[in-house]
Image (cartoon, rainbow, N blue to C red; front, side, top):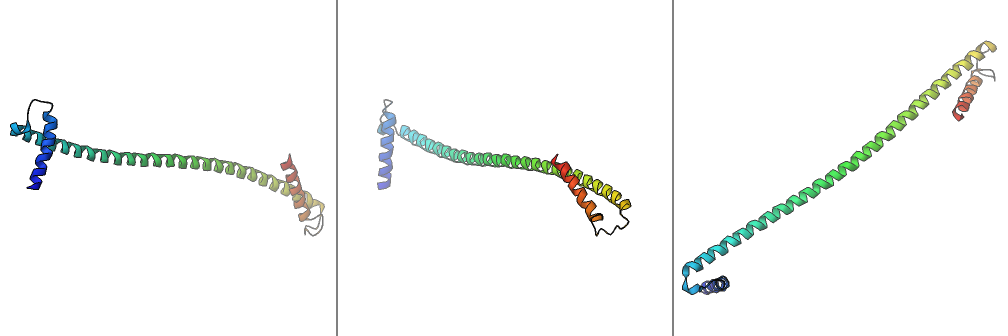
Length: 148
């Protein structure tokens, strides 16, 4: 009975608040009391639905923030890849220049060997007129070219 009395008091409190706007008294019209209770139940249901929707929207917001963070990370990774590709292009250029220098060195070495071969009957490479000296001379020539 106490629970019914508490519910009645709550209904009266709500009823009087609503009926204060209109010329009715809660105890005078049981249909009004029931209509008010039904309206309260509908409003409570609506409030629960709105809370649920708010929770869904908060989850979507967190998901969107994760997507934004992932997109930012993807942009950073793309920038890193582009920088690495630039460094690889620079390395290819350096390798190409080194290949050219090696070809020049080889050409100079071959020329030096051809010059040394007829001038020296002994091609053992043991003395200053051997192949070792020709190779050292060719390296010096390439080094001078590099400085220029």
